[in-house]
Image (cartoon, rainbow, N blue to C red):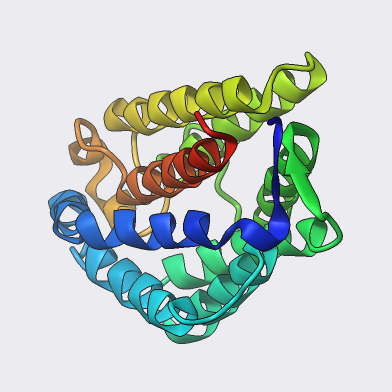
Length: 214
């Protein structure tokens, strides 16, 4: 099997919820090193609200991404709610027409999520933000789709790229947010947004891999 049914994607959404819940404290600790320490709390609040909303509901993968994006955009404080909201709604808008999600359709969705986000944020690769995770992950899935790789192999490539992007932020100088005021003191610490982005993308990939029987 080299695709999943959009209508059968609810387990993928719940896997995303679970990974944020399980890493709430860790995200708070990472954020607290150079930020205000509330990233884990805010993310957990939004994803838990979403999980509660869909727990007893039949929902498509892309419909769920749209609902999650709207919830984060409208109800979660700080900058990260709107950032993730914009990303997920971009993915959902492109994916809503797909009955099946294969490597090509998923690549189109992730690329749309990134493009949607880049229309509203100034951060680019190297600025120590979640962009440092999202861009290489997107590059990896686009490359894999272009090469005609199996969906499962493409997702594994995406996960590896996301993890490398997350780790790349450790030695970067922060250019945005509260941590940007720290100058050189922002080096040596992972960016919290890059960490949560990696967790989400990897959970999304793992959920799809389970649906693929991998």
